[in-house]
Image 1 (tube, rainbow, N blue to C red):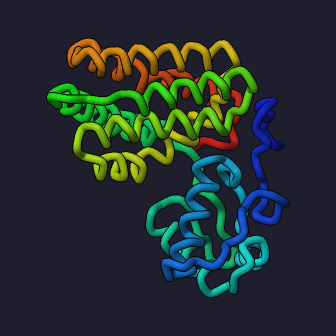
Image 2: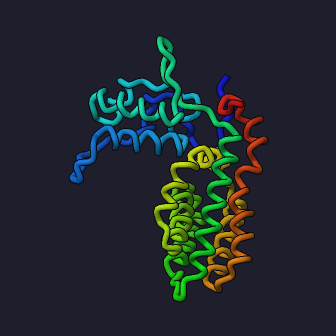
Length: 246
């Protein structure tokens, strides 16, 4: 039996569902097609456009992405190596389920690196947080319009900007690779309007602490903020048992 679904997210259950994947267009940078297919599939898994346990068909994916099956096959092999999908001979390929211990590990990595990035940014002699203030306003607008995708984008951009201000933007890329399971849980725990308001309030306090060079206060704020989604893990597992595994 399929699990119940949140009101504001339409989780996809098959690779062939209309709108689950975005077509691959011509790339002037000459990035390999298989790399772009891989990136789109990772994004779809991260954003729950391809739900945990979803069955993947090379043919359906190729049709949606407007590519041949060869780059799709290469991308799926990379996804399997990364543990994001599971290929069972004679059975098929499915998106991996969520493991709460993987989410906890991702939380640990993100919290540790972001606290370090925040402290490094606080040590900068001159720090301009105007861009962060703009991102806070974007979050406020997405809250007013209940645009949850825009909120997540502005949320990610704010945390990415903290790493950029620290002088270690590459560390955010390491966090991104690590926190896919955490992001799936965050998407599953779709915030309501009140929760979004609380998250924006926490972001505003983090930006204030950064502007004031308050490393100790910011460290505590980021730690609490990073653990929010994980606290909802057990309840989400009860609500969506088909999306989780041991």
